[in-house]
Length: 113
Length: 111
Image (cartoon, rainbow over all chains, first blue to last red; front, side, top):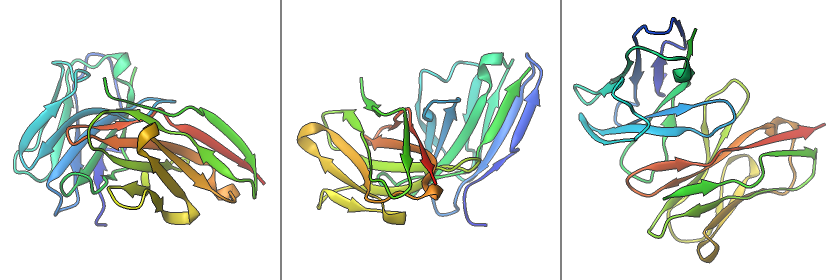
């Protein structure tokens, strides 16, 4: 499979726990994006990387959220001290430079109970 | 602030009816425009995109969209919908710094 891969597909966690998601982009794509999507809404931009550099972060990304892309390949998104409001689908997308359209992964659905 | 507006939240059509979904954006600079589709239980898939040139772009599955710069619009059209087109449709705008999505339009096609 040469698409964008996200793991896990589903995560149920108790409030206050930390969770980490992984995204493996298409190998030749240098840009990687994280989005959050809640029911009835479009995806909301969280952050993006060009290679290993995190170039932009949304105001939605509170200090409990951190993303890394240490070698410019896969990326991780960590949420610390999860809250019920963090329940959402977390989407990863990758592209080769701007404007070519993004390829999305299937997402990680987080449920905080 | 930049934004993308999709005016139709939920559209219900019978098979063979024509479809037009509205999309307007607010951004004064150069943009690239996209329509994505999300079938039930599946991930977002690119339908079509506009970068430059002919403002009428054709995508997969018989969809097309027209970029009207003066109206800041990028409406999606299909002459004859099928039951399999039932999905959520998202308009998106790439400003170069961020990629903004609209809130989506849910399309239900009745056989």
